[in-house]
Length: 208
Image 1 (tube, helix red, strand yellow):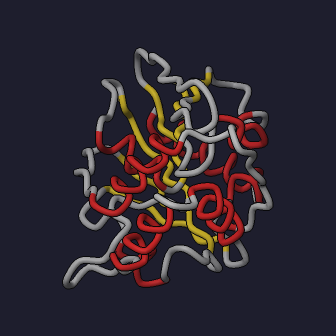
Image 2 (tube, helix red, strand yellow):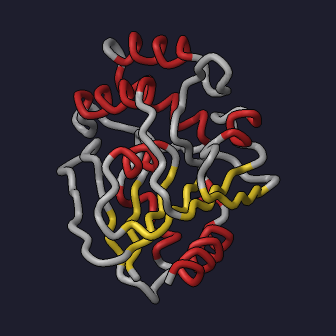
């Protein structure tokens, strides 16, 4: 069994360092959207479990590689914005971000990180606005289907980005288990890597 790591919007492959270090028993494939440098889409063969964060969950769901055996969706979701009868973040919030992003991309990215609990900063030439903008559009509009594999949804009870009703409604109809870290926010792989590692081990052992 292998592990495929997929990060969220505004982050990169280095996001996974604390969690990946706790999971040396399985080969790692760690993707990178190229928001801050060269993109990297790793090739993965054979059965694997996807370990996803936030928007990274939507990315894997949109194009699941062959061999997907299960998903650990950390702070994850299959749709971000609300629809009639389906809780989520209001579309107007993303529209406002998109309009401002076209003028002040670094400011929007920095504020997003602050809202997540990250204090990262970004220099003049450190970001790829086109890639970030394209995926911000996907974050607003996409709703990929859920593969028929086991899903473990691990959420923070104090996640400032995902409303409680949205967290409870994610992955409806899937073969899903849920875990809540009551004191956790939106960056559980950084805030509670040991908890996330235990969840990954449980998933791998369950599908192996």
